[in-house]
Image 1 (tube, rainbow, N blue to C red):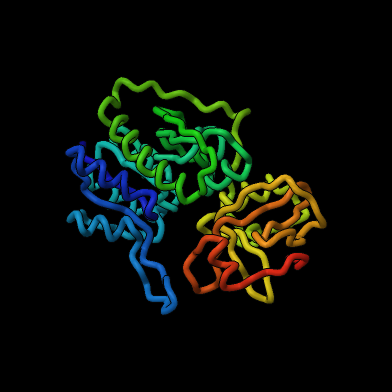
Image 2: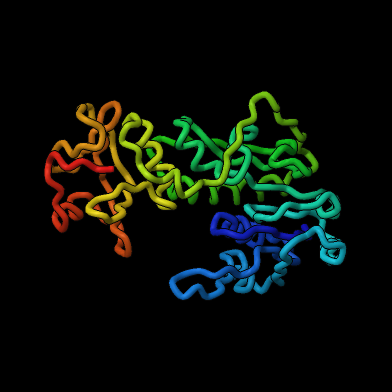
Amino acid sequence: MRIIFMGTPDFAVPTLDALVDAGHRVVAAYTQPPRPAGRGKKARPSPVHARAEELGIAVRLPASLKDIAAQARFLELEAEVAVVAAYGLLLPRAVLAAPTHGCLNVHASLLPRWRGAAPIQRAIQAGDRTTGITIMQMETGLDTGPKLLSASTPIEDKTAGELHDELARMGARLMVEALGDLDALTPEPQEEREATHAPKIAKTEARLDFEAPALQLEREVRAFSPFPGSWFALDGERIKMLRARVVGVNGAPGTVLDDQLTIACGNAALRPLRLQRAGRPAMDAADFLRGKPVPVGTVLR
């Protein structure tokens, strides 16, 4: 098919690759303009931008699609379908209606659960047992369009980073499957009563509150790993906790209970398994403690 691809982060790249590998003609890749990144704050192209150039696909970088001229350029491509994966810009009605088969979105949840910007993190944080991918027909609402195809996977003890990579691959396979049998798919309206919202992760959420139950904090650690990284303060330094497990012991919240840095919480305790100091690579907790022992009885905030 003649396709316009619209995506920005790493999550979208496997879908772009899958479309090309399946023999579809991607006539243009729309992505967010380069943004300052790294210590030097040098403008860096998005992962989709970089991959599209490697594949020889024309890249377009509109700051908005509300402009009539930008909409006209989109229409001139005469696409049969637009495939969208974490693009980051709202699509006006004129853009949604331009391709023959409209715009199809790869969404990282089992809609209508977790509409919005952070479906992977919110599913882990809420303790959901399963999540998945939904291929949906886009409309003007936020992730409200009818579902075309879906697939699920267990969350188990996966971090957001691990689940992100799994769902990116799943979404790529599912989108190719959907395009291969598009006319046979029956759009299924979403049940509004079951809808939940997945707001963007705020950095202020990442600080660990040891007054909370350990089970809740363990989910938060996985939900925010690797980014932004749940953290606590130790000797004035911010320490990220990237993986942990719940231990069935109790104590005053925030108190270090043993030489494995087990930390008492509002209920039970949290034992870090993977930690990261500022500006350093992540490491196992045992390696961290060899370099920075934390005495039993230390109170963390």
